[in-house]
Length: 253
Length: 119
Image (tube, rainbow over all chains, first blue to last red; front, side, top):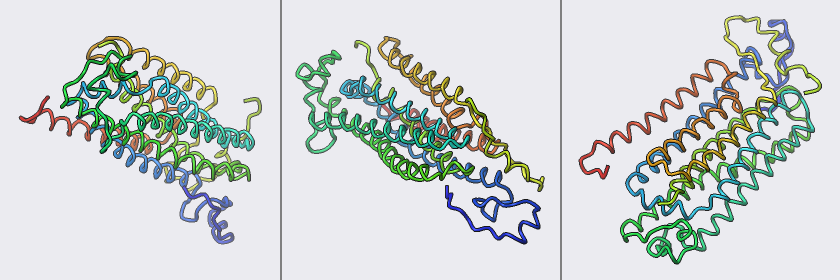
């Protein structure tokens, strides 16, 4: 993803190829197109490792969900579909603004590129803000796995606003305890997703500064393009997380 | 889309005189396509929320996954440009999906076929 300008030995190289090298073409690539293909390939290989990384979490989710389905339903009822839905919209919109950012870089529109990146940045922060509200609620209700985990919402659902609204029935103790597995996966998956968002937002901040200086509107857009791939990948993870965690069984039991 | 700028790669590609390399022409996806995909993703999100409130039994999770797969495919093909990418990229993405399915498939076949299972 490196996009720093490279010194090119003008002279022999140029004469040999009979065409000028662009300043950002690395000397070990024969053409810019070859360099673009190589960096694009590298980015996708990185994303494959990411697929396998999240794939492990999804596999764990799948197995436990099938084992302890009632616990997963009750755990899912604790999540707020409105917040989850809004966050899905926020993330999809940020993916759209990012895609538009790539287009702006391709067509060399500097100010619009900066605008797209800033919008993506803000939407990313908005997503994390909503996630914080949701996490706070889980902490307050002692639904974070660990020593302070509380089974009250599942043993006595009538005492719990969300459980009561969903019409949950009291669970046997051994199944109720498995809601902790659900919340472990909830925090592992959404937490890893949020970490990817935080890293992405950091890189976006750097890109906004560079874009303002005209860094991506001179024809060399590899960095914006590959960051776009990363951002869309994070979006895809959420596209699966939302129905799997929030919408397990929302209809009346 | 009022003014049509010169594509980034237009000037770059005119010198692949080496000839023996299979290089890929850079394709600029239009904002109209992005808008359509964006709208489709919003509709998909509304659909998946709506579907979860219906009583469909075993079809509930299947429908939820199916909608998510369609949404993810749209993102991969258009937002991530795979539809317009080189064969190498397409093969790489396909390999990723394939390996992921092996991860899920092999693990589940193990769990399903165990005597102690609660399956």
